Amino acid sequence: MASPEGFVQALLSEQASPDLSNETRIFEPFIGSWQLVVRWFDASGRIVREQPGEWHFARVLEGRGIQDVWIVPPRGSRSGENDYEYGTSIRFYDPKLDAWQSTWIGPMHQVVRTFTARGVDGRVVLETTPDVVPQMRWSFSEVSPRGFRWTNEVNEGGAWRVQQTFEATR
Image (tube, rainbow, N blue to C red; front, side, top):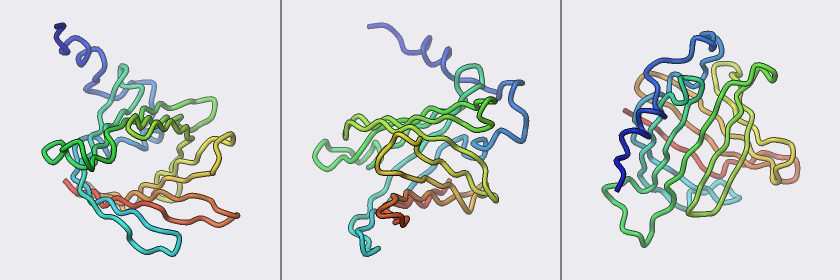
């Protein structure tokens, strides 16, 4: 079997690319590992499920991108029976858009979603590309060195509804 070290060394980057200005590095605060409390909500806003998870972010592709791995439940708790997801997002800054292009891949649910991300009033907001139905918005807020909140909203009939939140801590 081939060793994964060569792949890891080619993928991961210690530093952001010098092509990225400080103003464009909106995902830098998330670099590292986080413990999660993940909550799912029904249409009335009631919590219908809560589960722990883990989320890891790293610079990739010569520092031009940021990739994450999102795991629920955490690796130490996975049994195969009630495992929710083990997925990844990869994103890069696109100067033509003055925004980040981002793609989420969730193999356990066979989902691929594409987003455009921008910094908005101290938050990082990802919106699905126009071809995606239903329209979705993912937001990082309350960002500090020790934690952040992530919100997953869906547009239903012209109104945004929260369907999932993460409370992330180091």
